[in-house]
Image (cartoon, rainbow, N blue to C red; front, top):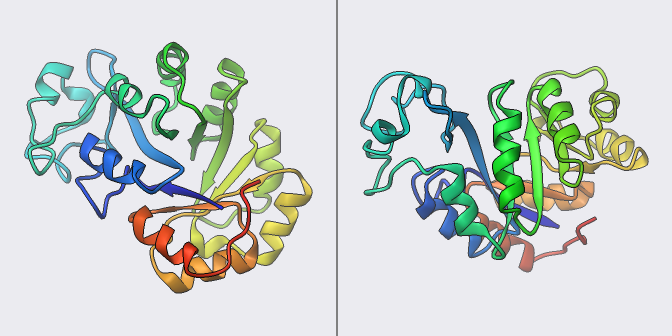
Length: 231
């Protein structure tokens, strides 16, 4: 079963920073980052549309140049890393999950990924159009559709945008969802699982992996109980 370090490993270091990614890489099969563009069009790893929650700055990410953005404190002396810095860190060491936060940014993100491909790459988004575009631009990567709300047919929607993975919020996972996805040839990778009981239930349901804020604790939980192989 695949373990994905959520925002690197946000329980072990400031989220989406190189410190969190290093901590996540110690235990996870893949580490995940959220990508947005700076004012000068550089992909950087940050979840929110503004810098207020995760740095000592204020205002929208797209209002900052890269130089100004990297001057902000992202916690514990860390700065907001560029996608290039993330790729340099994970290269040949870990798989990478890239969440595309903003439709229209796919081409620049993919162009950078093509220059330094991780050993395993998932391109994922809440936006179906971003999943479809990413898959067209980089067909060799595995693409995934994220969802958190009620979805009439997430499997059908994922297939329609050429995705190979669905990434439901954990409370949207059921035996029926897993079975339908597997019947369609899709992987099921829910988020965010941090407790031992939830991880045991995920194993029972037969999901293919999951995202965790603390992938090292998740690894210990899996090693202490039954596991299922990654698909």
